[in-house]
Length: 240
Image (cartoon, rainbow, N blue to C red; front, side, top):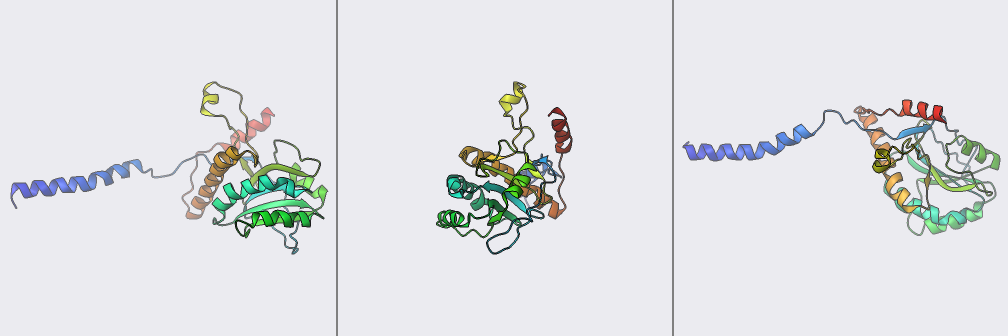
């Protein structure tokens, strides 16, 4: 083999392996990232509620978006459509994902009308409406960290992310980078307003993605996080 052939082969080998070596340097041995914060633990189970078919739907072992549509659920049609388009349609294929909406007893007819609106676009296989007493709705709502109270119909446009261990997830510090630079006061994001499209599309969608990544890594045995959420939660509670 002459010098030109050797040189040509060497150049080809370098051109082939150089990008591979570069990617290996960029790829971390472990993926460290801040998981979605636990903003409140021990959320009450929904065992007192049932679907029209008398089926109970659990929070335990499911990744749940929990909502309260009250005794006039059609009033929440805009919130429901935003939630379906921006969250349900995006995550309905993920394992153990569900949307669970609590409704006071006696409002099945209005839920039927709301379902007709939602069913124009897709089946609701992982979306459940369950019914129960008003006091049980208040009891579960009070176990959550909310940004505003239930309205007079026991409903709200807020929804909540609940993990498999019945922890409420969100952001202990929801400040923007600019607000952090200005050292503005820390504020949390514990619930998501379905009327605010930007909040659902940008913040909630991203938070759901982070949570699913966490559980996927746990299943694979590769989960490793540098999050300080437990200490942050403790210090946040102490401040309050």
